[in-house]
Amino acid sequence: MNTQDDLRVNSDRLWRDFIELSLIGETRAGGVARLALSNEDLRARLWFANKLEANGLHVYDDDAGNLSGVLSCGNPKAKTLLIGSHLDGVPDGGRYDNSVGIICALECARVIQVAGIKLPFHLEIINFTDGEGCWQSLFGSRALANKLTDNYMSDTPTDYAPFRAALMRAGISPAKVKNAKRNPHHLAGYLEIHIEQGHRLDDAQIPIGIVTDIVGRTTYQMTFYGEAGHSGTTRRENRRDALRGAAEFITQAHRLVEENYPDGVFNCGNILVSPGAFNIIPSEAQLTVECRHYHKRTLADMESRILKLAQDTAIANRLTVSQKREIHMPAAHMSPEIANHIRTACQHLHITYLDIVSYAGHDAQMMFDITPTGMIFIPSKDGISHSPKEFTDWDDVVCGANVLLHTILQIANHYDAK
Ligand SMILES: [Zn+2]
Image 1: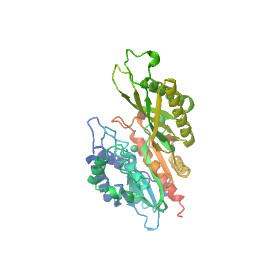
Image 2: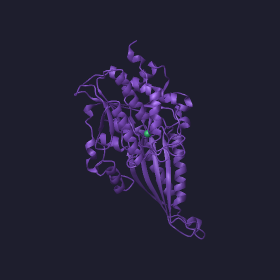
Image 3: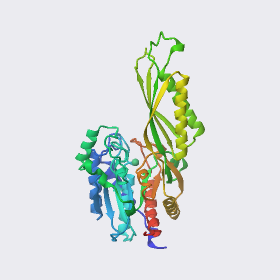
Image 4: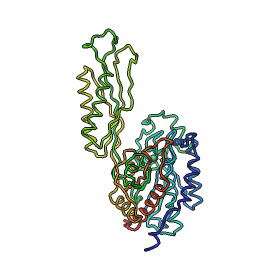
């Protein structure tokens, strides 16, 4: 047995990082609020930069504000293995979603550095800007993967001006953001450890999830149009009630997906009704609809049946419906080779694992088609996340960090420097 096999992360050191980071943006409810580009996020970045520097890693930030610490392998021609996640979080969030990925990656770099292990690639620990999409979904990784649209500012749901101001305040020049793109030929891969944010690992009492796919996601604005009228006096056969048709569509769409797509998700998250008074028949009902599935063709099939259902329901209710596709995020598939390395790492550490699909979005989604990408999940107690109640048993965090460490070593040991 060589010494690499015995390497483990330092649980106490990792715990100290976790506690220090939990205090930045801590809320009264015991969680953390650290919105991207807020004062708290900037303080967390400073904390991270100080940690990197104190550990002798080379601190680097790109034009999208992605902040990294690099452990160089000494060969200027070598590629870079990125290990990342995000420090920003949601309002009134928990302590794990926005910290585990970064502190575990940092700890792995420290262990590798202290052990004097020579890797065949540079190891770069990266904090992506706005992983939660408070301004724009997966902004930093999107910029790095060169997937920002030319009008990326005006594509945001929030106003252009505050986003621009927030970027500038953080020292990020909106005009230069696209310079953050990396040449995929310089990358050896991307790894991310994250809490599951679902309940499958917790239910199964299994500490590690090996992510196979991240679901694709499409959103629509659908508006049902009818005719306003007096709610009391309009004859039943003359009513063209937009909300009634919309309501019928929503329940039927849920049933359609439940019965035909066991791994699919349908959600109607909002309804805007007008004119919007108790005594007027609704003439318009605008729905915000989302579909998720990890299989491209199945997602497309699900979407077309849902669109057809909306049309049919409109006709049956003497309504019309408009359907506008808004966001489409294709499904992301993790590298089977990296998944194998994660599996081997688990076996080496005698840790049980489960192949798992991610139903939440992650920076890995931006990376998978530019470089081989892998994701490790650790359990979320009761599947809760984006809440102060977010909790992961500390042993599971340490276990995940060790799997990450040995995955890096596995990748290194099987690395073919092309
Ligand atoms: Zn996250």
